[in-house]
Each structure stands twice: as C-alpha cells, then as structure tokens.
Image (cartoon, rainbow, N blue to C red; front, side, top):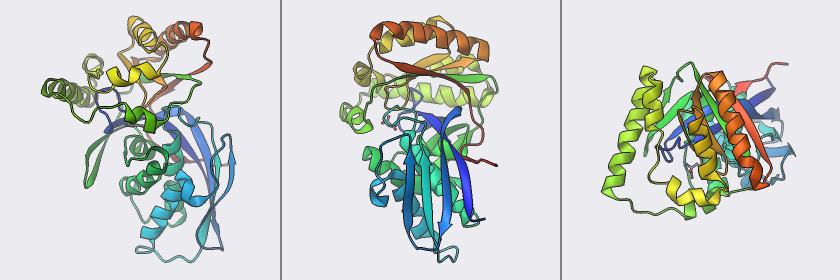
Length: 312
Ligand code: HSE
C-alpha cells in the first residue's frame, strides 16, 4: 500500500467532570486526509483545503505528530522513504471539537498503516499528543485518544500515558452547537486557576467516578447526574455568549447533561435516543438565535472506531 485515505473524526473533550482526561468520538463530523509514501525522506504537507493552516511541517500539528511517529518507527521497521500529507479540513480551528487532534491523529494513524502497523492504536496516542502541543501549548490527550480509539476514553494517567477505552452505551447521542467564533485553547487555559479547593475536588471526583460507573453499567440517569463541572465551566463560560441559556434549554428539553465542549466555544449535550437529541438540538438552536452569531448544529452517535480508512 502506497497511499491511504482516511476519515478523522471530531471529538468532545472534558465531558464536564473530566478536564483533560475524558473524551468521546463523534461519527458525523470529521476531516479527510490522504497520506502517501514519497521517495524523498521526511514529511511534506502538500495540500490543505478548508482552513488557512501552515504548510511548514514543524508548524503544523499533523507535521509534528508525523515527525514524532517516524522518529520512533525506525526502531521497529526499516523504511527509506518519506511521507506526503494532504489535509482536507471540515472541523473549524478553535471550535472546541478537536480540530487539531483530528489532524494529529490522522497523520499518525495513516503513517502507521503505511508502515505495516508497527504500533498499536494506544501507542499512537503518544505521537499524536506531540502535535497537540503546536496547537495549544500543552500535551493533553483527551481529544487525540478518542479520535484514535473511538468510543469514550479516560486518560488514567499522563506519566506514563495510560488510556482506557470505554464502549458507549448504545442509545447515547451527542448534540453540538458550534458558534462561529474562535476561542483559542491557549486563551481558554489562561483563565484557569492552578489551585482548587478540597471541597470542589471531592465534588468533581465524585462526578467523574459516577460518569465512569454510568458508562460501564449503561445507567443513563447516573451519566446525567454526573455530567457536572464545578472546576472549569465557571471560569470559562463567560468566553461563550449565551452559554447558560443554551445549557438550560438543553437540560429543560431532556438532555442528560450539557456543558462546554473541550475548550469551547462549542456547547455539547448528551441525550438518550435520537428523538430527544433532535428536540434538544432544536431548543439549543432557538436559544442561540438572538445572539446574532452564526452557528452550526451537529447531531451524532458515538463513533466506536475512531480514525478509519475510507475505501474508494
Ligand atoms: N482539555 C482541553 C482543555 C481540551 O479543555 O483545555 C482542549 O482541546
């Protein structure tokens, strides 16, 4: 195989109580990438459509992640060629649904396939995280892990990286309202406090435990009760116009929970079944009309596979 075409899905990180450690993979929104072997060594970004992003390998998240996997791959497989990468963006940068992660995860997944899969999908998370640094200044895996592995993911630890994949309860749907404004992850991280109170830590860890237990036991009510964030949301929500109104509209119309998707500005809701998801999406849209800000709505099931190959 000399060339591979892949779908790189959008993701929702944090899921309220799991800042920097929880995430899920979406099915209906994502980028496309084409990766091919080239006789020239090294990594070359040959084409980007749908976004104004740097073509220079070291400045591009996909380029940096690709360099990271290639550096390590030479210890496992012998190869003398390089790789060319085409990126066709559908996920807008700074949208809060893992735009940079999709590119980083796509690059390492594609190169791993073309090299004969020397690394497991779990191992690929390490390389994709290197790309995330270019976008946000920090090595967090809560978008790249679900993008690569699918389902829900928990980053149990960062040093060493320990990622656990959890199957999604079958009836869960995600709704995402993406306001067409940009919130840079680095700016959304700058508003956070380095210290938290013991009381808040107890509340947050209780909710995180509840979310994990709810996912494993398919307990939708427990999932809903646990989708709360006392640490991050209060400090970030002012960055998102009408956040409280949208969240309330989602909850009043049957969502299990709602909150900031990743670093924002997207607002997500999790719902049990498609019918509720459609009602919630309608209510969230209605509550955003008066802002004058354009927005996109997405309804998606949870993607069980993560990044995958597009067969022509
Ligand atoms: N966990 C990260 C944050 C996700 O909230 O800053 C951003 O990509």
